[in-house]
Each structure stands twice: as structure tokens, then as C-alpha cells.
Image 1 (cartoon, one colour):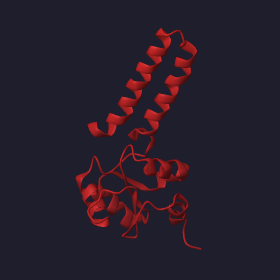
Image 2 (tube, one colour):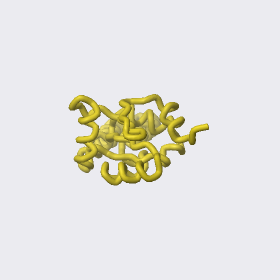
Image 3 (tube, helix red, strand yellow):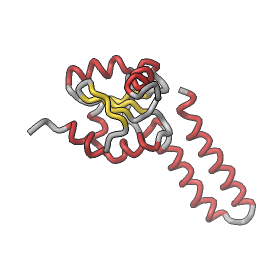
Image 4 (cartoon, helix red, strand yellow):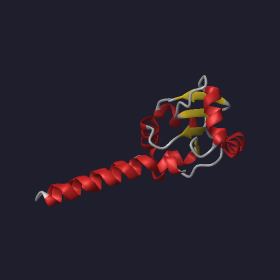
Length: 145
């Protein structure tokens, strides 16, 4: 859990330090404009933008019951962030597993990726796909025509 918040907290602390330095140098306007950028970056790299994570075993059980894909992700992963943002509101239809919080999820990702924890790994009907295109993932949510 703590590891997921290291990068966001560093971004907020660095942004605060830069803004404080700019304010003392007589540039409060620049500081006021720059601090929200650091906060936004921290938010994008935090677990907050992702739907609630569940355990890998629970996600696999739910996926078997409802047919929805399982997404294995970790905070700070730019490809996971890209997938989440590009899916928009459709992201809530998937089952999300944070591999930093769930050892079984990390093991499932390593098993699918030759021992590497490469994310996002999306499992559709029991078949893993590493870093698939967001449009393809969205198509997997639609019922077959």
C-alpha cells in the first residue's frame, strides 16, 4: 500500500518546494500556476483514478461469472494510466487488480509474462493480453453481434 503512494507524495512535495522557492523569489503567480500541475500529476499517478481494486482470486471468480475482463495494473504505470483514461467511464465495467496490493495478482501477471510484472495485463476469457490497445479492451466489453 505504501509503495503505491511514494510517487504521488514525491510529486506533491517537489511541487510544494518549487512553489515555495518561486514565492520567495518574488514569483507567486508562477508558483500558483505550477503547484496545481504537480498536484494533477500526483493524482494521475495515484491509485485514486482507478476503480476500486479487488483481489486476483475474486476478480477471476467474478470474471468467470459475468464475462468481464480482468485488468492487472500498478500505480505509476504510464500504460495503465493511458488505458484507464482512454477507457473513460467504461473502466468501471472491468475488474481491476492492483498487483502491488495483491501477491496473487502479481503472481498471475508473472505467469502470463515470462516472469515479468508487465502491466497492464488484461485477461479476457482466461487468455492474458499484455498492454493491449484501449479500443480493443473496450470492444471486449461489448456483447458479440
